[in-house]
Length: 254
Image (cartoon, rainbow, N blue to C red; front, side, top):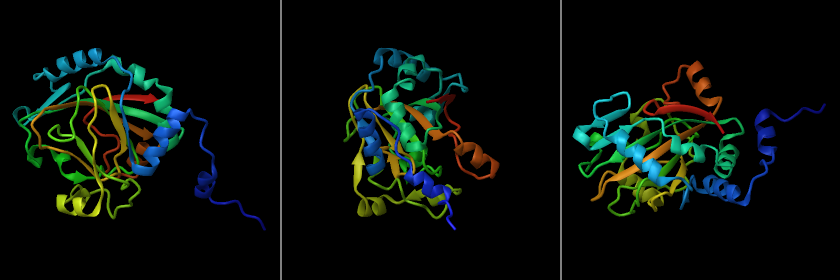
């Protein structure tokens, strides 16, 4: 008697949706390496800069801006209208849907400044090598200025670790790794780039935000999930940050 294959095999047999060559290139690099660098998102950078400057200066508005360690790290979560062009960019959206599934959403975004005061992981937990304890999800970075690989506090990734299955996801400390171990065992890439560009990466990748440098770094960070993932995690009562709570919650289907 013939039995149909289980759902996971059906999923593996599905063909990718039709995409432009540009979308295919983004998807291919994400699937192979866990990240892809983009030279230009095609956004109004002057408008983004204006919103970022205002938001990062709002020291009294704790619902909008959070200041850590007297300004070593500043995080702001205002509404950013100038991002609408990216949210409706079908080249980017098609690649994200191919990677996360057709029911994909932007959950939210934030503006982040790493200032010259930052010189270690004591006041910036993302400076330790880690994965985000959230399984497969994507974060998209927009550079508000040129970010140099050396001295510019770039995000660093351990190449092709996005498909690792970890022993435990619910505990913070089991998601952290020593620098010596990562440097010895993986091919590390620095994800700097020009103003207006950035990158997309899978946060299941082992990565860190470099805390060391001589220059400030300012970025806008967007977070994407499959639409059904976070509700499933919540229904199971898992201690998994899905979605991240430190952002402006946009919830935009792509």
